[in-house]
Length: 142
Image (cartoon, rainbow, N blue to C red; front, side, top):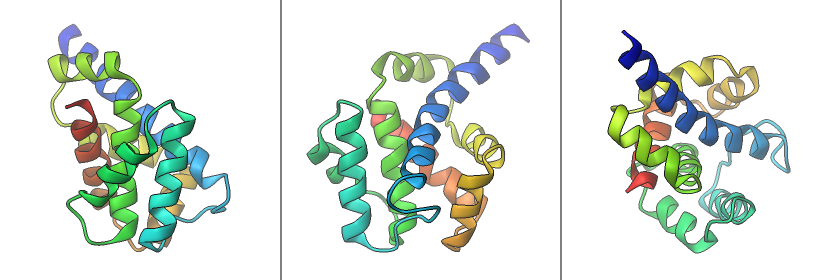
């Protein structure tokens, strides 16, 4: 059982970094909404990345290559990417100890009313948002 607890802590810590980025972006210029256009989302992703000492170009490339069509889901993917790429040590630990962080993302979103409201306002389900953040988190660790 302690091994499962360690795994959950590492997954949650990695995803929490991504959700902290999401929460800070929601309290900024966007108010409480996810970006609705590719231009707005890519600009915001670049800004968030630079504030976390990650190349804005690298984050925008992650946004462009996100496996989603909706800008809101692409943005959540990129936020997951930036959150994990900006903390390589936590990523390495998560890759060793934890599987896909989708469940941790869903749990963390449920605990953040502001983020959950933004997700719902973008007409994205909790499952879709958690999957996007989880996939971006995994991609950022690569």
